[in-house]
Length: 623
Image 1 (cartoon, rainbow, N blue to C red):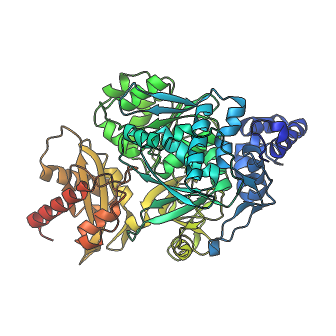
Image 2: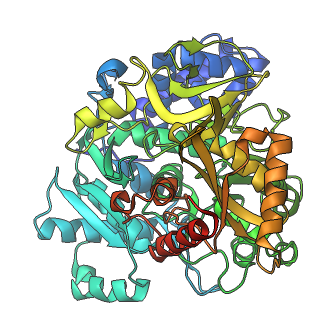
Image 3: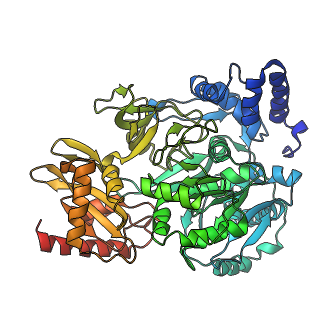
């Protein structure tokens, strides 16, 4: 029988957490009380006298840390008996074995039991001012009806359901319905309008189905969802995430990276078809009982003030978006921000790629009025949730523009040199790896575990290889320098493409850029830059090219200056806003047959524009 959520006296985990909290506060001093107030999950951990000590313990005694957190934050029907069973050398990752739970119960039922009228979703539809709100009770009812509909059509535990829907409440309910009946889901970005989708759902007579859907009791390591991401070979990888560890990590990072508190309105503008939408629109916020925004529109419809109008109307407290969108809006000027009241904002977040300094400072100074911390988050589909970010930290701890900075609880990053040795000093760069597992990480690649091992664990045996390069400052802060396959070796000098892009983007005329390497007969590799200008800029391309080369020469080195600068109207991007540098490299190498999978592109026509521009540039300047 499923234990009713919200009744803490009936939960072994919750009552246990309450008992250790009382004991902890009784024997601990004021400093420990402060830690417990900051993070109640840590109440029973010994020897913790501050946030730095808590962070250190989460790495040095990770089993105790994650056990305490899991018992406190999740509702279990059966307690786990083993915290972790992991071997990174073999790609073996298991957390909370023996534990049983249901993700939809954790995201819905336990909140309905205590606060059924709390708003769960605010659906910011395409037409501004037409938002709709759904309470936890209403979302649970919708989820149960959909769960019963899936069961009526033969979907059973262990099946995989592909969801092809726009960002709307029915899509969220579909994800939770799959979780409720024990089916994995695979969300694919869709182009249907919400109205068209609603008609198709109504045609199923879903509304006639029972509003009670008994939740399946799932093992902690049962599959929750698959999510496909582009690979360096162009063949998509179906990353597999499981139940308990993923949900716990999404909830914990949502709570502490963004300083989320009960009653806040959390506004992540990512599409739910991508990992950011999974973790920080759906699962993390709902597990925490938050009010989360579903953003269906675009940042410039009907005008460039759309985000900030939404912040004012919905009273958003935390805003989480992509650097690509921030750079786009920066081009339109401050007036579109200053039109709207943004006083409810407490935290600003950035996700998807490193944010350049100019965009960071504009985001902080203009959007946040200089009072909101900007958390530049680094993570991946593979990691399940945020791994490096400026917060959580002491309230007065510094935040450095353009740096992800600090590892999250339980995350142990290391830098590796080209010989596979750990770099122990600061003020150094290397391949970013993780020295120990964490609950939110992916478990495998669907139907290809060997590829999972070869991609993430074989390059540096015993470590998880992220594929990114990073710089660790003198203070020990981390800055992501870009994909290691985006490192260019020019005449023996290794330079990250992100470093060149950051300089190019500092030019007042430049909206954004993408730099790739290409085969050069003399230098080994040359530098090829794609540049998008800000709207209304009227300059001679030759003059601007000389200016950009001069900037790169001065701020980095002459060898880093682009050999070619191609001006473009737009860059090929995924629907989550990431620039598809793999595609750009193939174009520059004239390997059009090797473009690979383009299904994740926002607009495939952008690739043709890039190809045509490349051919024009070559005909003008020679190979």
